Image (cartoon, rainbow, N blue to C red; front, side):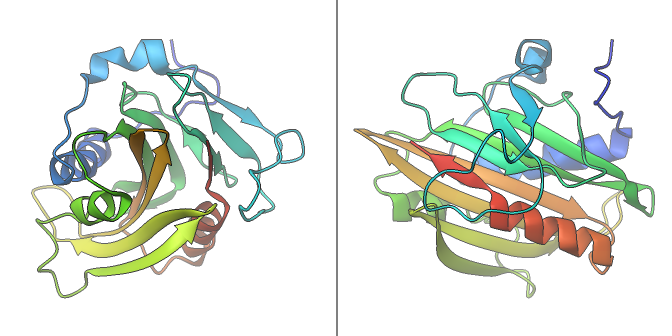
Length: 223
């Protein structure tokens, strides 16, 4: 049974989501659980109003409802993400690393549905520092692409980087524009890597651009 706020996704859009998640996990030298864990994870992110769940101290506020992703362990960072209008939950990818996927059928182009995926990974022992974790998350398979850019920054006081690149057409998949936000969060002796990957086949769509800006500006992380 599908949740009332959950959207179905075409096989090729789902495949593209899996592809970008795989790029991120391979880049960091990380492994994930099977997507068969989806049912167990599907209720972890719950929708709420921004007023009911104020964003973390030091984070930017945006005028959009926030989704809260519950931590799986006591020391795991708490994560909130804006949910612009038209973006709905899809649990087909949910597992121990992939914590949230949103899709927007209204932003479908060339048979491809715009989507975003959030991952949370305990990178302790896999990256020596926040800087090393962020560098490891740069997708090696696309770094030679002339469109690839990586912009360092901070998010809620944590080191971050925003990677932008294009993926060429592949099989039935059209060319896609991908934006990936990476945040490195030290917690005691542990180090967590958090990513948000957003992709579309219509990067010039003003609504997509507005929604992307909202997601990137309002994404919130706290310890």
